[in-house]
Amino acid sequence: MARTGGFQDDDFWTEFYDFLFPEQRYAQAEELLDTSPLLSFPAGARVLDLCCGPGVFTVPLADRGCDVTGVDLSPAMLDRARKRSAGTGAQARYVQADAREYEAPGAFDVVLSMFTSFGYFEDPADNARVLRTMRSCLAPGGTLVLDLAGKELLARRVTPPKVVQRGEDLMVQTDTVLDDWARLRSDWVLVRGDQVTRATLVWFVYSAVELRRMVEEAGFGRVEIFGGFDGRPYDENAERLVLRAVREV
Image (cartoon, rainbow, N blue to C red; front, side):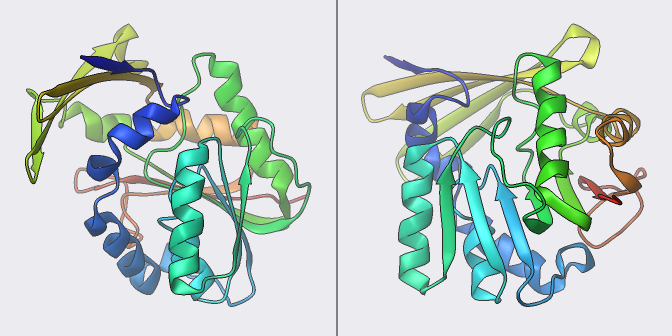
């Protein structure tokens, strides 16, 4: 039996890649970029895809004429992103860096954080630091788009274990609420032939009110909350928690 660490462990992303990033996820990204008013950026827009993973959004944004930089801590995921870019001819830059420490002051018109890529640092101050990094990287007037599974949505979805099968491989995910809904722990078990791999992720979960406060404290203004990429309200019909905010000065 093998065990991987948390989100900073490259083995986790490699072992669970097929379940985290199936081809449907890439197709979903393409569709969102074609249809979402929140992801409509002009050609030439300078976009930072922070925690870009294997380039799910980086590559199609570059294909659409944006000037895109993908930043991630995982060498394995960046390698996959580069290969995907090469396969499509997309001209994107990739940088291996910690989301807390990446520095490009005022270099971008848009910062994206997609598919719940925020809240994974153990110290809450580090998650706040990531927001300040996002603001620093934006030019005045630039826009942050931050996509999460909001706490309100998770509250109705934390159910008995989730089982997913891809080919002969089987993955079981069990979620546990921690610290009065401050954090969530996901325990993953992957069965691949005779090999069993276990992994655990723990991250902070945020309500819309909590996330708005954090973003405002990081110096953003004009904060808006949506319940999906179609711009719907964040209410009982919400599918995601999507926050949009502006660096005003």
